[in-house]
Image (cartoon, rainbow, N blue to C red; front, side, top):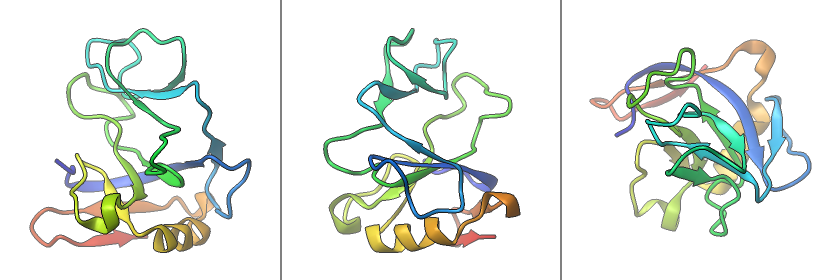
Length: 138
């Protein structure tokens, strides 16, 4: 389930060496994963293989779902095991016909425009709410 609340938007990521964005950008590799194993000391963190976890999200996905994307800073400072992990803004799966497992998904072109517009120095946040089904980015 997508968490409700106001969260910082962290770094942007994708397959290309650079991206048109005002966020800090990180190129994903085949070795990059986001740990969602709540028993791991690496829970809710982006790490490079080898890892100490049994469950994780592959950041360089063959389906392009995370190309590009951005981290929603949910349960990151501090990390609380089992509270939720790997909450991103990413590309819609099947043109928005399938729900996410807690992330925010946008059509690829709109996501690219959003990432180009965001500026890390302005401390962008996303406000998520279940009842109104509204996405607000400040």
